[in-house]
Image 1 (cartoon, rainbow, N blue to C red):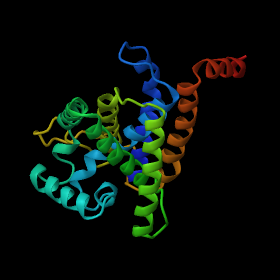
Image 2 (cartoon, rainbow, N blue to C red; image 1 turned 120 degrees about the horizontal axis):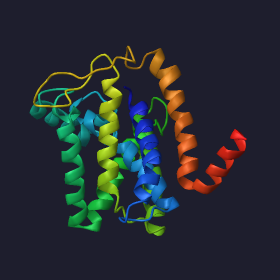
Image 3 (tube, rainbow, N blue to C red; image 1 turned 135 degrees about the vertical axis):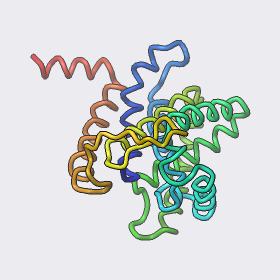
Image 4 (cartoon, one colour; image 1 turned 90 degrees about the vertical axis):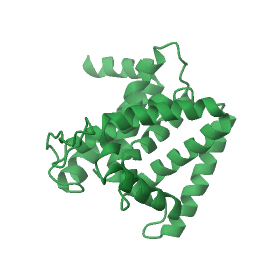
Length: 237
């Protein structure tokens, strides 16, 4: 799957999960939390591709993420190995919770990284201008972080968002012909080849539009559940 598809799938998964998260005693999700969670989960949905030096995530922060990507690629055994497994989903969620317990500053830095990944995945920037795109990304990122801080977003849900984002990335890759080694260190690939080629017509003209439609509907339901239910009942009547 392409970067924008992964980022969209992460946001859609977050909107779908909001009603379930809101039912727990962990936290009450407000509109700012829902918006921040969509960006964080969308950014986390790109994390497994940190093992691919040519992926969207590897170029988000220039040499920093590119060097990191090359290192992860060498350590994990290449693209679609360790970082494309259920082990990595648990590891990423657990490490994120650990970061959250360290300090609020550490959480803010990590959230900024994930939002940057999401913005890059969604192609927020200047077409065909890497430096210009990086500047736009940084400005939008700073504005969002500042806004979330003013709105008192606490990120108590960040571990769930990161784990969910990583998980939907694996699901997205498992519906391609390449599949994923979900039970790594076993390299047996799990695949249900619905999408024949990454970046092909099925992804561009079917998967992406469906994700955008689902995202709009689920975002409306997550933000305004009672109004959404009323609208649904009116449409069904």
